Figure (cartoon, rainbow, N blue to C red):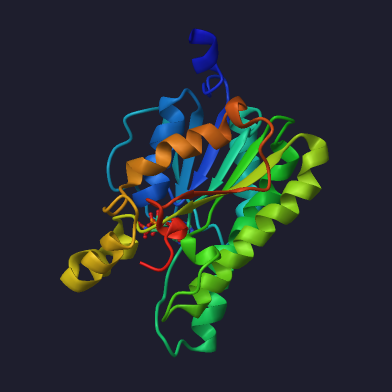
Length: 246
Ligand SMILES: NC(=O)c1ccc[n+]([C@@H]2O[C@H](COP(=O)([O-])OP(=O)(O)OC[C@H]3O[C@@H](n4cnc5c(N)ncnc54)[C@H](OP(=O)(O)O)[C@@H]3O)[C@@H](O)[C@H]2O)c1
């Protein structure tokens, strides 16, 4: 059993998690650190919303601006970067969204994760793992947010493309696709009784997700337990994408 559990250990590994000031990124940063990694969390806020309980160093930075130097500094301090989780993201819903909104969403949710992949690549050794946080919207159409779905669909394809490009170097690239998770991003629909119930009822498990529901999947994809898994989507969505005509 000990040997089996060691497959999931991140002891001795270093990780960077973007979007770590709150929500899903915060939980994943905590989770990777709890599994033994030395984690650096990045977001724009001056400080995370809550104190980290594990070994997480927090840096204030914007993933869409000058991120190369941030990764170089982290690598210089840590020696290398084994794991990157691209969790920073925004949503700017609006059925008749302006072009500027579309471009801004793609800039943060698609171009910035790619910039982080490029920035981390020189410092990531064989055995490295990149996890892009996509969405059920990466494969399904949703009303009122064409920019978000386009960006997440693009991030899903970027994941597969980089799995090919980085595979020969022993670096895996996977997408972790949450369903509806209770965070700031979903606060409006979580608080709306009609929307809340509609989203709850569309899952197979009959409930919204919590940020901690993402931790096991993130640790798995980051760890040697997933050593032969790359270019894949792992949906953590309570069965949302499995559900058909009901
Ligand atoms: N919640 C859901 O149901 C759900 C479902 C599917 C996918 N997702 C995805 O999961 C990820 C996390 O979302 P969440 O629900 O946890 O949302 P959230 O609570 O709004 O958190 C978003 C995070 O991204 C950071 N961020 C935004 N823009 C940034 C920038 N330019 N540079 C650096 N950090 C930035 C925010 O920190 P600062 O404001 O401090 O910069 C925050 O830490 C996103 O990619 C989102 O699209 C969420």
